[in-house]
Image (cartoon, rainbow, N blue to C red; front, side, top):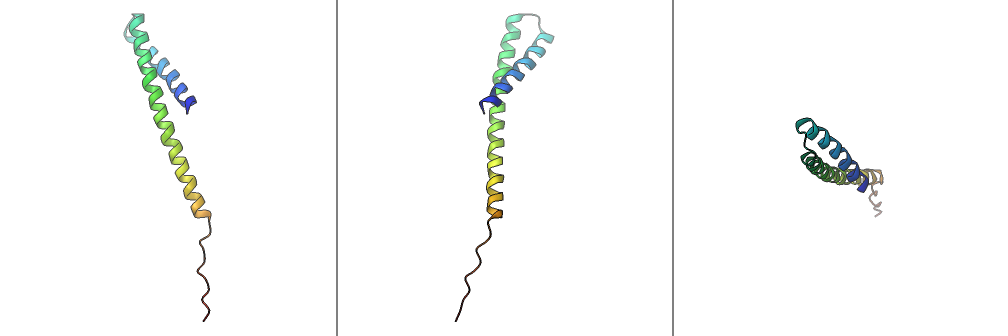
Length: 78
């Protein structure tokens, strides 16, 4: 999960840096916007990663439940 957050932050910083650099030439504003983009992208990747892991766990639990044979009813002898 931490790796996804770091990757998201790095990608967000690069995207924020590129967009801010294209619109303005002042470095303090560029770094501020790139830092904000890094924070938002890291948070978004953390949320997405948690959602993804939760869905994978649900699918695994469902497959395990389907793989277990249903218990046959006990034979009734009179």
